[in-house]
Length: 468
Image 1 (spheres, rainbow, N blue to C red):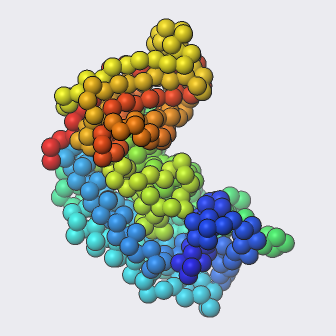
Image 2: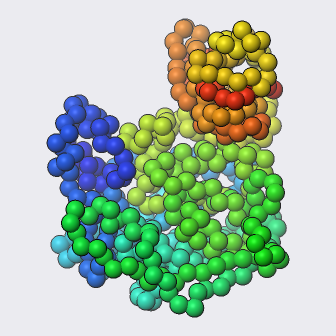
Image 3: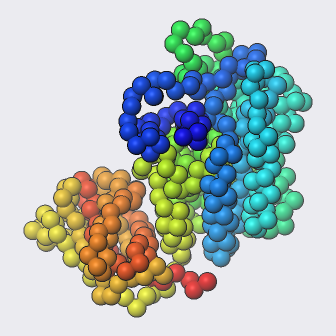
């Protein structure tokens, strides 16, 4: 019960509470939500903080499992000739600890958390780059140019540039990362800082968490920069006409285009960066899985991949029970999914797959490009049960539908249901799912494309994971 109270104080403010309460108390009681402690922390000098930034020692076992999963993922990437650099965004609370109210104390566990995470990952062979020390140093050295917004949870453009400079230094100090960066074609980028600070009405997300009637906080004055490629003509955009890049960034809202972080990386690394960041509560695991599924990865795989994640979510592994259901997945299944998505070449399994259509598709002859409704489906029959060493590979078009429903039938008759996000456009995309979904083995996969303008599935194969 104590852990539930702690979690209630620190859950993401956008998360719906009913799941939490049902799990912790076994019963929904709306008054508990109303009695929840205010998420905002009013600090000194008009600084605001949020309680969900607090790292709890009660979740340390989850943290250790998450770190182990990152280590396993790193080894999968290395096997596929992709270098990974993990960067953990430190807490605003510690970066500006002197601005916290006098009656609020950061725990000893939280003070040592960032260093402990980096140490554990390094011990497991993961390349990690420290952002905590550089951001703290910049905060102390230049109070006039803060690295975090006073009224928002995110870093400022100055903070984004400090982080990018730290990553550049970290890459150059690591022979493996330097080798990967050297394999990425260089580009010449320049940076231009604004001549004076600009008044910022947004972002100020913490102000929305203050009690009703709280006086308006004065707007912040922030210095911004603009990064451009020297060879670009006026009005041209970053990147090329093909998806993906040799240097990828998978991140949270800290990496959002508005933050300037990806642009800062382009400048400090003098390389193009494919920025695959997702706002909201998806979490780093769902973001990474979405990136690997996207054409940005499948068509053009990076040589160097930077994985940015906020400190507060490190322990919220794929199966974290308080994450939105859409993004929650068993830890081992997440690993199986990303492993399948990482495979560039299908190693055929000794299993044949046969496609059959059902629903309205059957009456329409199941022609490729046929529009579908919610009840339409296709069945993929396997001539023998597939074990956990196998995955399904196909090419899919789901124009108009961003999610495919999947039913996996075991040899014993038990059905397993889940959903997979897809592009939902008129193009053909690679589609891969693990088949090791049960101990008995799967012998049929049913796909529900949903409401589409056109749907097609082709090039169906059952593949084997590498033996190692």
